Image 1 (tube, rainbow, N blue to C red):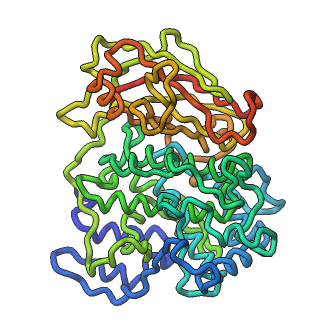
Image 2: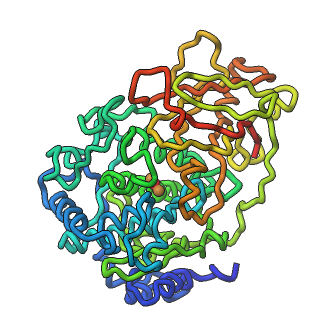
Image 3: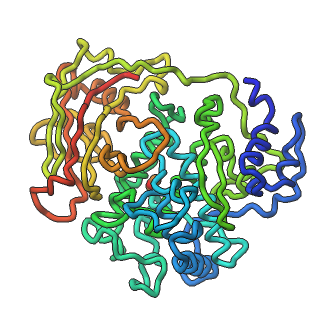
Length: 499
Ligand code: C2O
């Protein structure tokens, strides 16, 4: 593709799109403004900020001090200041009306978070990047970088101490609007290990397109959505319109952003959608630390060290002159027509509430052959459980464990051959989205069940015919059999497809 013959255009494109704002510093843009082999010395390299695991930082050390100071300073600013805490949170989502007299230039950026769209990762990377610049400026610490919370590490599944102590308003990182039961988040109880895992996401080798399953879809579901629900309960983090008011939002998203980088670094054909012009060039508006409006697109955020001046502490130091963007072989982006493998016998939707529910899906093909791994392209053609037309009126932080073909009377074990994963619907509600302004095409929730079905076939646990999908609620905040109708999840369509 002509556009990406040379990495120069990517970096210059990034600078140009910012309209003179030096997100890509001119000296760096020049350093990269060359084609051809050989390392290019980069005078600005030393300035790369490092986002660190918050558990590696001293809770009373200078980094956490800067974090507290920056958050407090942002919170003290009025909502019509784009560098204020509330304005920044409202960019994600809000139920508030803009104050009288706020120019549309500002208010039009509210409620623009991208969810269940393949801009999920790039939009949030840009959001964090400008938020971090504002926070750095507000903290007065020129080296400040956002820490991240890696809840996958054993022993680090509890909310980081600085966010819960002191547990009062003297602590700008504390909010009371967090889950209090199952687990008690501010009480320092660990989140369940099954909701923290990113291994499914890391295993995928395709980034994902609007129609094709891949990293972005899997990562959004878990750990992203599920962790929102686990942290938030009936409080802020479960609701896209309030989530970013909780300081933990930013640490959670720094981790999701890190996982995107980790995925890239794994290689094995993993590549961002550099050949997809819509993903690369669709711009999103934010504000920088001076309050000036800025725009960026996917092409500006492919390599954080080179384009955005930050990296994670578990990533290697950037190599000088590293050229990241290759591509051009057009690997993928098939306009997927998926094949339906199983669907309910009657076309009615389902409602998920406080009790487990079984849904029988009739196989549309004979035998098990069609459900097995496609040897030609196992990763490109996964078998997916697809949940479409999701709706609910009131977000709540519970999630559903999904089991497939669990025999009657068998214990639902997450280590068993029947456990398919978790579903949590953070921003998937059609009703909630009506008042939000996402650009991306919304897609159904999808869960890769290729491996599970293959194992069941091999072990003789399923031999074709009906497939029973069981949804088991988890993370309910009250031990009750009933759930307010508002919080029940209606699912318009459920089926199993081969992509
Ligand atoms: Cu846009 Cu984790 O949310």
